[in-house]
Amino acid sequence: MYTKASLFSLWVATTSAATLGPRQSGSTVTVDLTKTYQTMDGFGTSEAFQRAVQVSKLTEANQRLALDLLFSTEKGAGLTILRNGIGSSPDMSSDHMVSIATKNPGGPTKPLIYNWDGSDNKQLWITQEAVHTYGVKTIYADAWSAPGYMKTTGNDANGGSLCGVSGATCSSGDWRQSYADYLVRYIQFYQEANVSITHVGFLNEPELTEGSTQYASMRSSGTQAADFIKILSPTLDKANLSHVHIACCDAEGWSDQVGMLGQLKPVDDMLGLITSHSYTSSPSGPMNTRHRVWQTEAADLNGAWTASWSGGGGAGEGMTWANNIYQAVVNSNCSGYLYWIGVQTGSTNSKLVRIDGDKVTPSKRLWAFANWSRFVRPGAVRVGVSGAPSGVKVSAFHNEDGAVAVQFINGGSGAAKVSVKVTGGSAAAAALSSTAGNRLFTSAAAAKGWITDNTHDLSELDGVGMADGAASVNIPGKAMVTIVLTS
Ligand SMILES: *[C@@H]1O[C@H](CO)[C@@H](O)[C@H](O)[C@H]1NC(C)=O
Ligand SMILES: *[C@@H]1O[C@H](CO)[C@@H](O)[C@H](O)[C@H]1NC(C)=O
Ligand SMILES: *[C@@H]1O[C@H](CO)[C@@H](O)[C@H](O)[C@H]1NC(C)=O
Ligand SMILES: *[C@H]1O[C@H](CO)[C@@H](O)[C@H](O)[C@H]1NC(C)=O
Image (cartoon, rainbow, N blue to C red; front, side):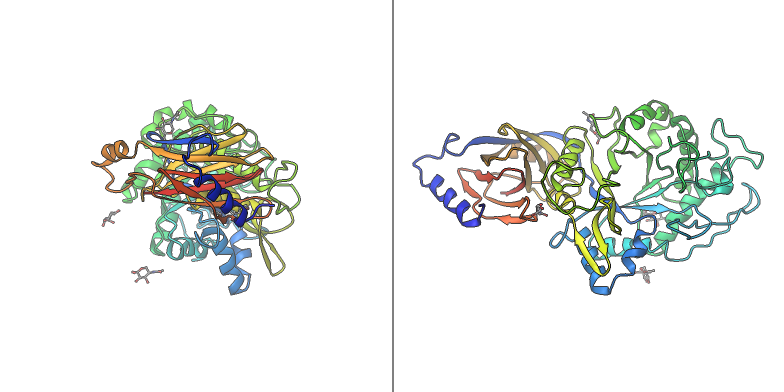
């Protein structure tokens, strides 16, 4: 029903009209480059909890396929952020992330005894691939917990607190400096393997109660997090790692993270990133912080594997994730958006790409990420956009190379015809001239489009026309279309 040929003739019919006014071309959508919002770090995922080990067990050809699907801008989603799990477990049984210092050195004043294995549950391999093969620059290393011997419970799983933060006194003493040293050493192990970690976190879902998590977990309030950040920040500085951003706190839900912000105020100058998951509550508006904000973990954890784009609006459908990303980035000021797992075995939607025997299958969730990530590159600034027809969500970004990417999510079942124009290019260039040399956009000279729907996986959309500096495009129902305009 929707073919390249029919779109093309539609375009020809439009341009052959004597004048191309907004009436003939449907709604006029105007991108305003002078109206700027947050800067983007990008989109990403994780191979923590030994999911990287699963990828490493594929044949070489399938390893490449899996990595291409995650990180390639030509063959996959072009993801630009990788979240790694810093292990705290004493062993590698089940999907445990093993600690880099499994043994208690005998107290917090003793130097830690490291047992770095050069693999990090194969996360080092995935990271080296991401960085060196695909040019990924943003690596977020996040610990779910400190090792058990540093905690009130003596166990890295099932909650407990870091000894030494307020309200967590231990007979063995204050382990905060040891935990900071531990995280710094992890970053250095990666550095020695030629990988620069850009962001470090020390918590994961710190509001979870003891007993509810069989895996690594550590409780923390905002105040307790601040008690540790006070130690971590100067420890990073001393190790010449002040460029590594401290992230906090990967709360289980958005409103929990909002609730922790006030208690983080005393260490605001030491923080580099605010992080939240979407499980118990999802992004519901900008957080009250000057720092960049990432949604660092979301997934349909239990739904049966689906590779469909749009059916009944199910939690695992691609279109659902296109909308989730929109809600986080456009309505909640997020600079980063991460799905839980990239590639994994098993029959649920907790990953973007499924390993089934020796088959590697992408979901439409992956293509929803691709529709954002391939065109909204790190450093892109979200800009103003208005005039979308009703039922169509629109967002726009000004990339560092000057290209303007506009996303449409058409929730209705009918097609919508729009004409897209860009204003403010010269004013934006003047404002930027002192800082960024590029990001130049004069007048729109060329436009390209891509479509994702039930039958297309980010296929190039033919029939995107240009006339009088405006791109004309037809957005089919229940589809996501991205238009990139260059000058
Ligand atoms: C890191 O890079 C240096 C310099 O390019 C090289 O000599 C060294 O072998 C690399 N190390 C690893 C672990 O890749
Ligand atoms: C500190 O880091 C900078 C770059 O981040 C590097 O140029 C410098 O050599 C480092 N100094 C030491 C003592 O490691
Ligand atoms: C959005 O986030 C940026 C930091 O990335 C911040 O400076 C800005 O104030 C935030 N905007 C709103 C409306 O909260
Ligand atoms: C966007 O998603 C659609 C629908 O799955 C897909 O067909 C298309 O290839 C994706 N576009 C890109 C650039 O990844």
